[in-house]
Length: 153
Image (cartoon, rainbow, N blue to C red; front, side):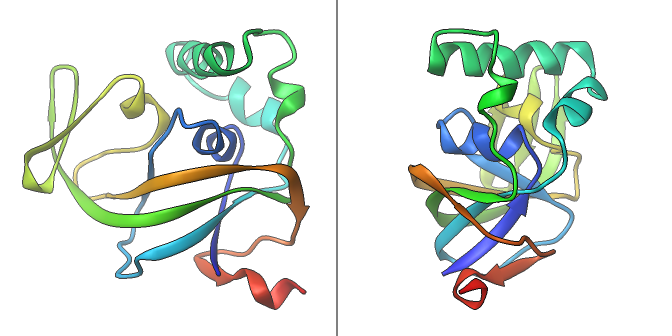
């Protein structure tokens, strides 16, 4: 199975269904099953570096899913596969508009999704569907780009 390493909190946002697009500076022609691997970097450090409105959107997503806001950061595992999904499409971001972004094919992205990625025109939005959060995260060493999870074992 192909895998992609994503920093927290974005890996967990995909796992709980709050984020369905992962944005990258490069496109992929791959379509099919993909493992969502949470990078080892400390999520506290990452979140504190973000704009306050984006922090609020992240916490709102965790609150909606877990029913509590306090402790959401502690629930973000690192260095593990947190979910599996189907990578169904890869769209280029082509324009911005008042409340969000436009992807090729006139697909519109608005808040909170647009807060959970860099949809700057020219970047790519990888669409995930059929996301399944793992009950027990699977330890794995992440890599850059798309990588093969099977090579970890």
